[in-house]
Length: 207
Image (cartoon, rainbow, N blue to C red; front, side, top):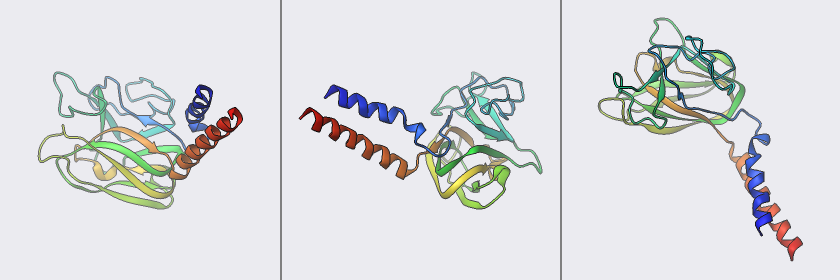
């Protein structure tokens, strides 16, 4: 019985090998100086302060990191406490999150805002907001004031998105944190079915 359970756990541990699209969680856990652009920090490159991070295959354009400290605690209560992110308010500039490996079905993120933002995030099939528009998403305010009330949302769409246009969030001071790819339902079900099948096979052999 112990062996069969270990086999199922091993199957789930190997989940990324079955996924067709990129799997990642961007938590912005870093000490960010004010208005430092994230840039390629999570893509094998560097942030605008030349610091480097783990390569998750995710690149940001027009997005800055922000750390909570004794002098700046606007985004307190974030799911990952040390660092968050926001879209820089640069007139005429666009902001994107690029994922060259693609995100299938949905994107999960936490955000904090005291205003409703229409068209805050748009999913596109190409990089930098090119290709087909796969979905447009509004973000409702999480509180009447301040940026310390966080909400998790899942942005669902059909197809594979290689970029997320965040330009609509510029100038709104929305805080973002823990951005992650959402596994396809079919992939999760396949893994679950495979696990039960492996468990049943092991039990039959023991019987």
